Length: 199
Image 1 (tube, rainbow, N blue to C red):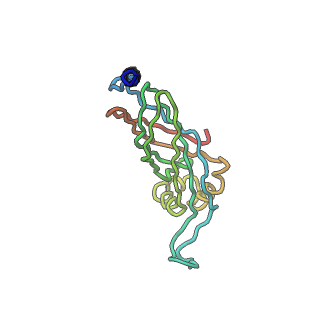
Image 2: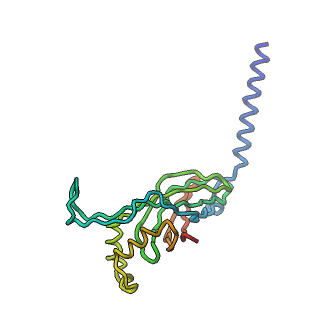
Image 3: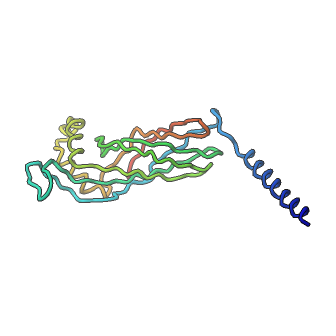
């Protein structure tokens, strides 16, 4: 009886091993020719945290702490769809992009949180970006000064417009020069992407 029970267990173990080995053999393996770059698209953008618009110059004495030039922060969340067209899983290793309000580049964001994307499926990736009023003002004056002059507007007026109307979608927010790095079995693919919100 013990011999029969042992034989039954051994048969089950061998059968399972053969089945699992057969399933693994059926899964296509990535090659340099078959590995297609996944597709990254901007799904949405949302105002994650909002503190209004304000600016304090360093001449203003704070109640606590050290005086300085401080502008209102703005926390935005960018949600991307990442589609894996391959018949094997791929790993998203990193993702980076530039954010522009209208035609002005304001910030560069990135994410190094890895995730696996199943074959033929679409995952979502959320990337938060903190936009500081003072840093954005400096960027505008240094990089976009000429554009501001052409528009006939100063940096403070432009920033106030963006900070107070961004939740209403009254101006375009662009994702530019995006690059996402993917890996599969030692192979690497880089997907470029751009986007606009609202579409």
